[in-house]
Image 1 (cartoon, one colour):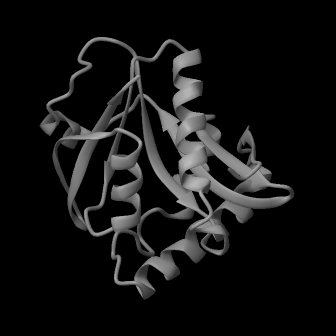
Image 2 (cartoon, rainbow, N blue to C red):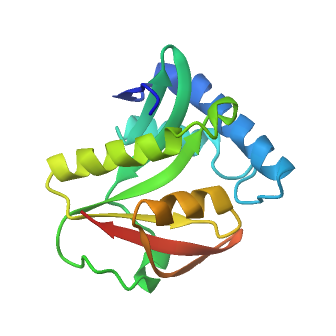
Length: 167
């Protein structure tokens, strides 16, 4: 597993994080994965995540390796999930993005395991997320880690799998 350090993102990390997303979006589009674009996730969304204290950055040495948002906020589409954990505390992973230069090195796995440990340490009983079906690397990662499909959400870019893992 790669050695990563994690910290809550600060506003002075915004430019660096924005580059992670822009580069990853270009890489996904070049592979026919049309999950994200210039509209979402945008700089203002990332900035708001940082201001709320919900955006995290992972570093491999000094290199920004990934960014993600972690909270308990879901949008209306999450009502379509047949969630196992309906009353206990849970966390939702949003906008997990691995630096395009560092993909295929186990960083996504390492981050998800870190998130699960963080959630357990903060009394959460499950992790929820949504995943673009055409992003086969991401869907395989979540399946390999024990996440199960609970429903379908429909967003501007199409259908997304709602997924959950009990901790």
